[in-house]
Image 1 (cartoon, rainbow, N blue to C red):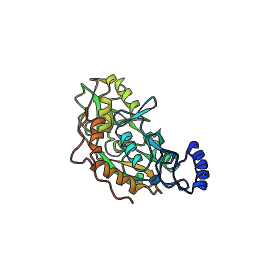
Image 2 (cartoon, protein in one colour):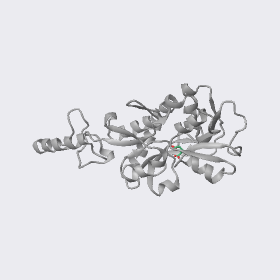
Image 3 (spheres, rainbow, N blue to C red):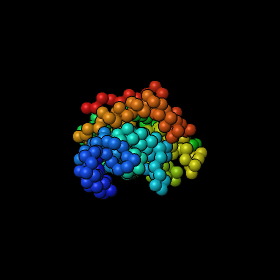
Image 4 (cartoon, helix red, strand yellow):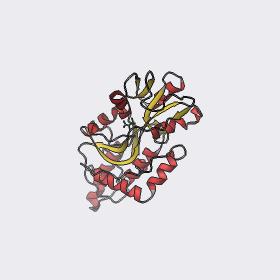
Length: 289
Ligand code: GLU
């Protein structure tokens, strides 16, 4: 994992301490993990940091307010990181917009991504995935009084907003582009602003994301999710293609589901305004490649 400057300094002092005492370990109060050179995610801790990509504008999933990060993805990330040996203060969250996720992982700018990130074969050519830990479905967000947009087959002549680099935009282009004008934005919050201003007729992405916007106080009563999902989006943990943590992340996800934390986290973050598909959730992680 990427060592911070602080961790680098700690490593030097730690090396000196080890020479004196021939004992491995971190600073007082830290976990007693072996202090390998750089370490792996599975043996984190010891003051090492982990950089995790999240969304920062998706209420209920990944939202930044000041220095606070909240949402289901953020909570799942914290749970998994802890199982890998990273305390909450060792996590550095960074924004990873949809179109940048593969690049951020390829360049080593993030160690992992928890960002409503669907597992797809195309993405697997560039990155690896642990999970899935949630299954959503693509849907449409429209004005509360809209009656003609009932699903992907009813978009003729409509202007739609979605996000560049998402499966949502790609599916519209590939399967439902007939008579549809697609506006590609960088973020879904940008799309929702366009919908609020009446500049687009609908926003399309995963139902759980859309429900989070519809429930925001500033948009109260303005929007509705159509409720006719037309895909299965398996949210995975994005990892570099070459990694040695996929199995450990899967083990953490399985434990999170079995110990009841998954249910608690999903209910707390999105439960007030969204009913997840109980037939598909919680999903079982797929074997790592
Ligand atoms: N889950 C879809 C994807 O990974 C849409 C949501 C997003 O863009 O984060 O492309």
